[in-house]
Length: 178
Image (cartoon, rainbow, N blue to C red):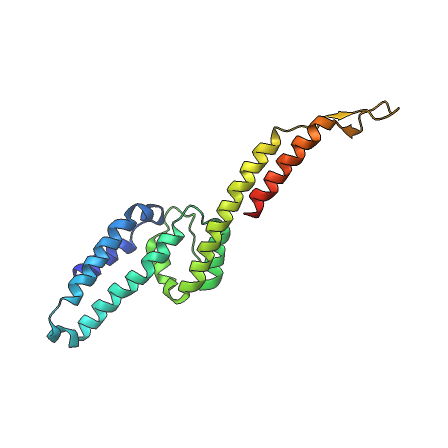
């Protein structure tokens, strides 16, 4: 009964609050799983035991996916991929979006695909951060031009700046390649 009530309580959590409760939920579900394993063997033949065990195992399987989906790297485009995958509408930006909607979306059926989406999101976030870093570095740089031969307008890069600019450009390219 405690297991079912606890999971029912978890299902009512608002999604925006779930990351704060992840560790607590994990510990509680692991505790339930341990207690379930220690139950007398005579009880294991009962249908209620099978249902209880399945409920605990299902929640243990979905928790890592919830942790992944709760990361800051998950953007609306990733949620769209999850919705396309599950075929469920998940209004994540809604103020009343609850954990129950994600559990009801049967995320366990798409464990590998959702993990791939989350892994891709993590990599994309790293790339986006590098691009912002590089953009801010290049924002402050200016190219100095000078006149050339008899032309009365600046049309060639100033020689001293070319080497420095090439060096910065090579560093930037190396950063993008890693």
